[in-house]
Image (cartoon, rainbow, N blue to C red; front, side, top):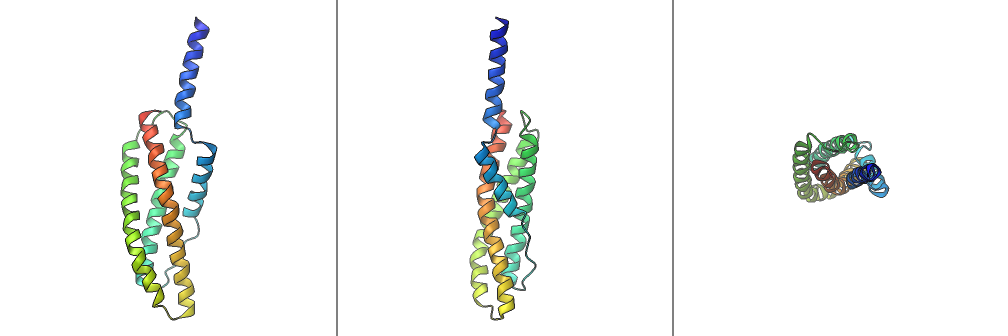
Length: 155
């Protein structure tokens, strides 16, 4: 009977760890997205619309990396004490991401007005950075929200 109880407790514990654990593929994909978010950031290019989008993307990248760091620390735990706060941060960052999506159109049209080849190169690099951040954060934030919800539930 004692062995049965020990096995039952061990299986229950393993099941709760497996529910919050990331699969190796999910973890690798998340690490790749975080690497994109930590990539070198372009300097201001001198085109206001593009510089505004890049500034917002830098904020989004920083927030997403901070959220991922917090969940990485907590993923070895059974619960997440500040989970609701992190979930609210994810939601606000997703809203900022949506706002950047609307600004990207204006930034792209501003790019067409740039005539100086050196400025065009810098502006294009900045816009590509913004595009990469939007793509990476767009995938990472919902993943982090799912992970946080699982940690809050104690699964």
